[in-house]
Amino acid sequence: MSTKKSSPSLLNKKNDPEKHESENPANEPIKPGFTRRSFLARIGATGIAASTAPLLRAVPVDEVQTPSQAPPVSSQAVPMVLKVNGQEHQLRLEPRVTLLDALRENLQMFGTKKGCDHGQCGACTLHVNGRRVNSCLSFAIMHQGDEITTIEGLAKDGQLHPVQAAFLEHDGFQCGYCTPGQIMSATALLKEPCGADDDSVRECMSGNICRCGAYPNIVAAVQEARRRA
Ligand code: FES
Ligand code: FES
Image (cartoon, rainbow, N blue to C red; front, side, top):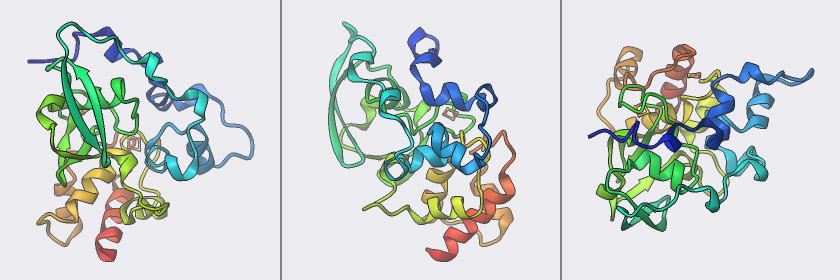
């Protein structure tokens, strides 16, 4: 069963300030004196910026959706509780709503990205009970009682997770749209059986597509994080 095309609001980029800007950053001219990093931090639209938003204060408050902008509750909705980044959220959602849409459309958590919505790009990767999951392929209602961790929950006590720090250090991103998914996959990979060489990392990260082609730096960042782990 597909949920992708059943609700126009799910595809409405006007409701998604991050996706709208990051899909075509060239729409907004970069002012003189801006570096790429400062630009990414300013628009708050992309992976590293999204993943470190609590630290960088990258998303202006007036760009964040308010609960009143959440989709209306359907008559088919059922109550459910989702525990995201340690916090329980009581929701009423249709059983067909994916975990990705529940986060983005109902909890206004935009760090987890929607790319293909078909399980092919890895942009929506998050952790369920410590294991990586493509949230576009999983129904929210299946995850009651699970520990869901998104990119917003990775940094602790004001400190970046070592994988986030390594991505910054090695410039493991360009536009940054794939970066939250890359980082969540890489973080899970630290606990998975994966060979030591770069080819093994490429294989273990092959579910995460980067259309900017930042792969060499992504592999370097993952290897750096593995050395530190
Ligand atoms: S959006 Fe889920 S894999 Fe592409
Ligand atoms: S950094 Fe642009 S898609 Fe990966």
